[in-house]
Length: 358
Image (tube, rainbow, N blue to C red; front, side, top):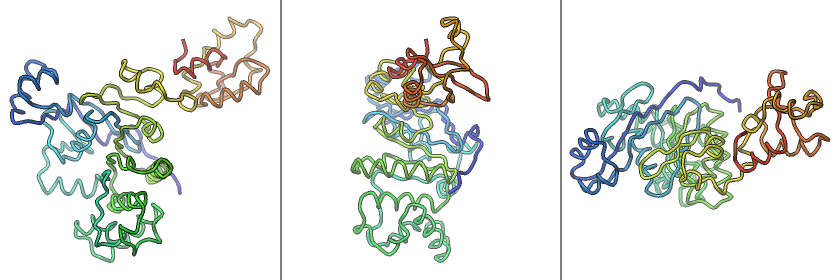
């Protein structure tokens, strides 16, 4: 299956200083936040309101898988429901494809959800009295698509997720992983540009979970979709995400690539999160390499042109293998035919520890 090439700079979803406050005095709490800059704790004390999302800003680009992760109660599931207005924001602005979703009327919002945004929940909620095909076609049926056309589209979506032989079966005949595939097929059948996934694999066995993670990433990339994926598991976020947002107490603490988050954690909370994560396949040569001049000054008789070569995107595992094959204690990093840096043994150790070049 060929990968669809997209302009990764195009922003499809844009959250700007978004808040969600739950409670009977939420309007007064919003006013107090705006005027006095109250904290989450102060809002709870003064107004008996809970801050679900606090001043969240992030962007989801075309063609990327954007993971939002955090512990239970961090606000991640609240935030994803704000993206398609399943719940209303208390403050701030959310645009989808340039449209302020708060200004959409009921009909326009239904149309956006039906055509632009698909969603898959942890509980896939298949209709037990309907076949796999009918479940996959359900969203199209709700849109009023003719039966023949919706079934044809649903069959194609089920084929994409590997269930073309199960169309006549019922949900109780499927494993948990297969049911999640039906949920994904149902979302794909409407051909949305954006897919929202709220911990869809968290209840599955580890082996099935990893398999679905790989399938989801490959399928999303091959179809050129954008995805927002909610998880409480950092390893899952790293496995899937092009970029990751880490949330705590309703606040987006850090947004970045897995490598950026591991090598440059924003605070002690993020540092604790990434402490047990292996850096072998996360940290890349461009992060731990030294400038060529610095290397040659330290080793006047060292010719970088005699070093084994690799690309800036080579990970620590690849760099270790190259170093072990070489009679030199360094590897040259080459871009467009030019040596742009050198990775030394010290650089490798820093990479393993999750530290960028000094």
